[in-house]
Image 1 (cartoon, rainbow, N blue to C red):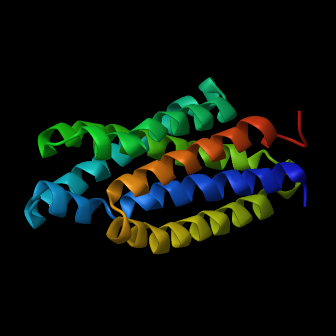
Image 2 (cartoon, helix red, strand yellow; image 1 turned 90 degrees about the horizontal axis):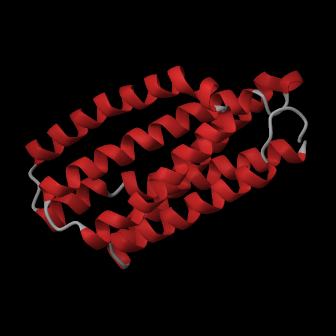
Length: 185
């Protein structure tokens, strides 16, 4: 397999694992530390649905204008500080909501922008690369879904946030260094 594609899969694995570390325990964290009710959680996650639509539309409108790699790297760079920030600095649910919505729009923009980048890693095998990318996304999410609750219960939400931020930054570094459209630089 092409090194460019392997690097792309490592990048995707890291970033989706990071996202899942946060998303899989957010409701439990909000309920435990902020006293969020089921109705409040439902309202928050309904808002997130609209925000995700906005992130997806933003990716559709701006990824090609910004540049695929720049859009992906920028989107994920914006999520990294928000991975750890709320656990350390935010103490009220009302203050957390805009931060969480910002996080959600940034990662949705980045994830959706990843697909056009994937499609250009090896244009002559576009379908295969996208299929492997989707499988890698699933693998990252599975690992994050298994690891996230264990970290949350064993250490606390801050551990999820710190690990998510580190994995996001690792993924961004891999993307910035080794992931290029076509066969390389």
